[in-house]
Length: 136
Image (tube, rainbow, N blue to C red; front, side, top):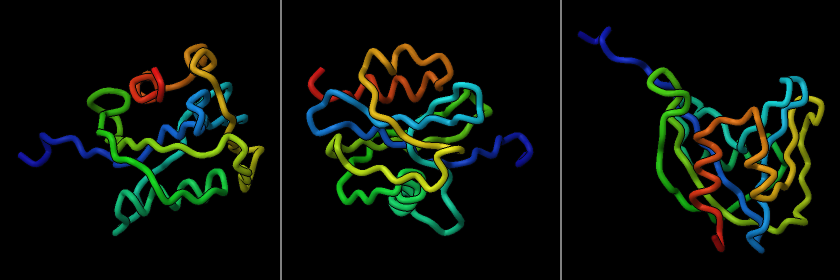
């Protein structure tokens, strides 16, 4: 009976908006043919989701964030995908982003129109961004 269940990987993602509500931070993966995403990643063994979020923001974009809001969870890529724990927060748009390896991944601030125009981004990520966009 246990074989009837699908084992889901658990990840965290954050829609990080600029304080003025005009932009959101989007990850760019130059080696992956136009793929875009949101900051975040997988939980490590024994790690709590909030700890994973703090660690991933530091690893991916070199920033520290103390205040964030848990939003919801969803399955990325349908029944066979990852369980994504969703967060939102705001940060100054002029915050210094310091990605450890920009040839592999880096983050850019994008407007709502720019996010909507991305062709290679999970629809679930786009929904998270759109549904929580401040001042909309």
